Structures are given as C-alpha cells and as structure tokens.
Image 1 (cartoon, one colour):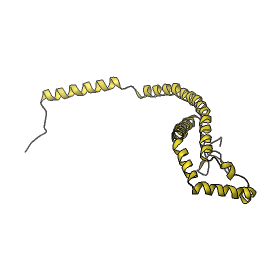
Image 2 (image 1 turned 180 degrees about the vertical axis):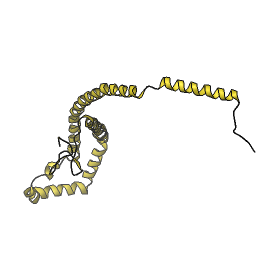
Image 3 (image 1 turned 180 degrees about the horizontal axis):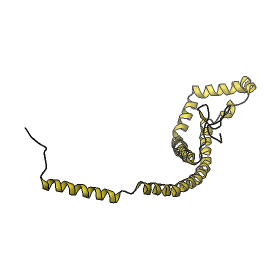
Image 4 (image 1 turned 135 degrees about the vertical axis):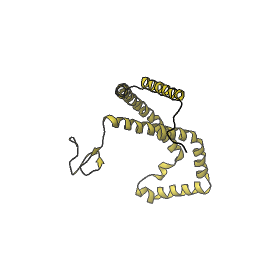
Length: 182
C-alpha cells in the first residue's frame, strides 16, 4: 500500500511547468481580444455588405434581361410541340360546331397513324438540350440567386412583421403589431 501522495521528480515538474508557460504565452500572443474580433467583424461587414448589395442589384438586372431570351426559347419549344394548337383553340361554339369536330377528327387520325406521337417524341428529343439549358437557368441559377438575394436583403429591410396575434405577415390586419411601425 502506498502511504502518501505520488510526487513527480523535480526535473519532470519543472519541464511540465515550462511547457505550460510556453503554451500560455503562445496562446495569449496569437489570440486577439474579443473587442478586436468584434471590431474586425463589423469593419468587414461594413465593407462587404454594401458590395454584396451592389452585386445583387446589378446581377438581378442582368439575370432578368437574359430571362427574356429564355422565355422566347420556351415559347418556341411550346409552338414546336403543339403546332396545331390554333385548331384546338376557340370558344364553346367552335368546339361544338364543325371546326371542333374536324379538329377532333384530325387529332384522332394523327394519333391512330402514330404521326402525332412520333412527331411529339422527335420534338421532345430534339429540344432536350434546350430544355436542359432553360431548366438550369430558371430552376437553378435564377431560383438560387433570387432566394439568396432575398435572404440577404431581409437582413437590412425585413418584410415580415410580427403581429399581436403571434403570427408573422407582411401586414397586420385586424389588430396592432408588437412593433411601433406595424
């Protein structure tokens, strides 16, 4: 049985004390004070945030300017996919009259002889690259940009107001807001 506290040799204790002192000195020399971190962050935010807002403002205009081209491509693909659409349109009188019966008959003939389905399949395959490009533009680039831009803009100008009822909305109807401008 041991009859007392375990002690390290003096040399080992001295070595551990020196290592601890070196570690603490190194840590204190490399770690900035919390106030310096906060000031650095605020300065960075004050410079970067207006630049990000400027980029959003400029990029939004460019993206929407190019959107017209992609809308035109979508319309072209729609017209190619539905070339006889003008025959199917019209009011109730057209659909119930001779024009409606003729267009229905033409549709049945094209379907029975597989002209319609083969045409639509060919157009579908031929326009696949265009559909992929427009899908990537609208569903990925535009969506991600708009969602990111709206989120960043919400930091400076929030659009939702917390109503007295506890729900968030753009306006509080039927009650007052918890905020002075609501």
